[in-house]
Length: 598
Image (cartoon, rainbow, N blue to C red; front, side, top):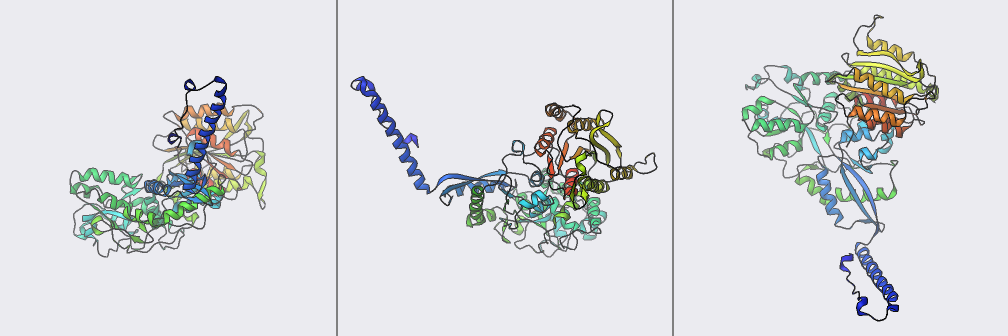
């Protein structure tokens, strides 16, 4: 604006006596200020608003580019609320990572700016996140979907045609296991494609994988996963021939095979979880052998991109909420609707021009939308999946300081709740998992603040007492009694060093530590700075072991715990009221990322 102001400033060399120069200088300042104020007033009058209220909108990476386009077009309308100018900052955030990050103290240095709005790729991620009491309070009941894409089984077109596509196809999630186990499956359909090769994507990170897992696990579509239905989770695991990170890992290999021949594509695999949008995007590259979307007959969950204006997060303000609500109206309006439809998504169940047979999709989804799963069912199913698929090498470290004896729920102490949660976690591990147990307070073993109760090793191992290591761990946990102060820093350093010594190259190596306090070791020991130096050094090594910290109860030093976990390469979780500690502990063991976001 100031560049448009070009007041004529007479040179003193052309002026009169020197005594008049201060007056002239004052007049110049007044003229310049007047010009600036006039331009500023004109600008604000044109906008019709003042100030700038901004909301941070964290969006699933696959749809974030479209949100950036909507933000750009919305900004040109000079949006305002109550006379205040409003704006949003769109940031790309992985849905799985956000589900865990929201459950702990928000570390802006690590995670970026805290969000006022979360748009995960599916409500199922929000349900998973809501197993944490902290997140459950933030996730709103109103969850408008901005766009959707059904979860499907992507299949090479020739194979799908052999099953009757695009006409009525009776292929369901449960048929994956049947087809994968039958060496003559394609022969029974008059084809010689060899084995039915199923590629599964990691449901802990892949939306398509998560939706496929939940659709398989909830066989009767009632929103819950029973103990008997968990057998279907095991069947899905047994049926996969290939386990990859995400849909893009499969499509990248298919594109490579397609450059060779159609036969190479058919040899690579028969089916994998995908979103309908993934199929359309792949076929837009015009491959020799296109993909088609197989819609399982019992229905599927959608990637429905809910617009979640977080309810009263610690960093929230009324101004940010107003900006978020204004942007929501624009995204849900005709501009957003037309943009999503043009890019292969559905809006309110309606598809756009890209959803045709020629692009591997059906104009109308032939199978029903499934009942939204309960939060506990999502968490339990993911924990079960992780336990049976992930090679784990973990040291569980429990705080047994005197404060753990405090009664927090009825007659139950923090120690009672922590012990119950730890036993439940130990029972979930696969027998081949490698696990150990430490406890800590102060001076438990001479001057040491920590003590090993069960050495790290395979849970199915037979121990000297004739029991398995799993049972020894359960017995040891149930016999714990609290007492002493909290020697936190020394314990963390020693626990990480212990697991570095037991490092397994192809396993997920972790320390998971639960505490209700802060470091108050009266015997001295490491400072926080000393501990961070050790963790930072380990993080840059080839054998880093991340330390997942869990703050338990209102007195835990959440900020310091987050700082410690970040230094080691992961996140910190919290259970402030203690009631949900079982869920938070399981999330720390089975769900916490081992590298920090974003």
